[in-house]
Image (tube, rainbow, N blue to C red):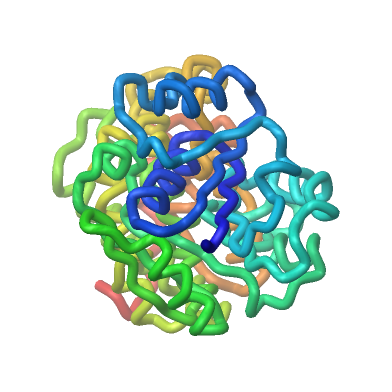
Length: 335
Ligand code: 13P
């Protein structure tokens, strides 16, 4: 039986492990730091931290022992905060089976290096990118753990590996598609968090659907510009991991990024929002690394710039809006 280890028992790690357990004949083990969470999953089939009262598949096992989780795993699925990935991999590298494929569920870009998560995996483990897979798409974890219908994209430059994981996670309520465009899928996932922060700010400021549609549409334009400059296929960004995830995240009250933006837009400071929210809004830190990547490649990303200015340079939402609306427009492909 295929063995899958999922490292990280946060919301998406838990929901994805449950998808694999629901999908069928796979032995799936979820690793998390805390014994009490592992015990609750094993005994009550529930993750009390993120999904109290929602029944997980009884076949899903959990452990706080990472060596036990990784033993014999053919797929090692990683779902930790993006900025902690490198240090986590350094601690796990000796334990990851030599022939395993490593799957990233993370939607971020590393600060300091501007590396995508698949690049961090490949560098840190000395793994060919053909053995690195990314799963992305409009995948709000709570809806998925409730077994509501959802679609996703499984990306790997080595197509048979993507197809293999597609079969492992395909169920009656979860429909994964495959692609070889790792760059497009990862940048779609990372940049949409930044755009969702901007949409949240607009909503928090009391603006309506015209503003939201403008940010989503122009946000997609800047995502496409960056991704294509880095070698992605433009069509990927029109798909589930681009437009699909952007629309879901920017529209959803479940999104950590949109919620973070809403609180900022309604008058809280960045520090106040960080103190109040327990979960990681990936776009807050990735906005900086994405902007660095854009500047290094001479790509204009005005929404991302406004988000960085609000998150890291103390610009108020009102000031950011004024700067955004009054900047000199350049002729562009996407109107
Ligand atoms: P948040 O990280 O903002 O909660 O977004 C979830 C997501 O990536 C949905 O696809």
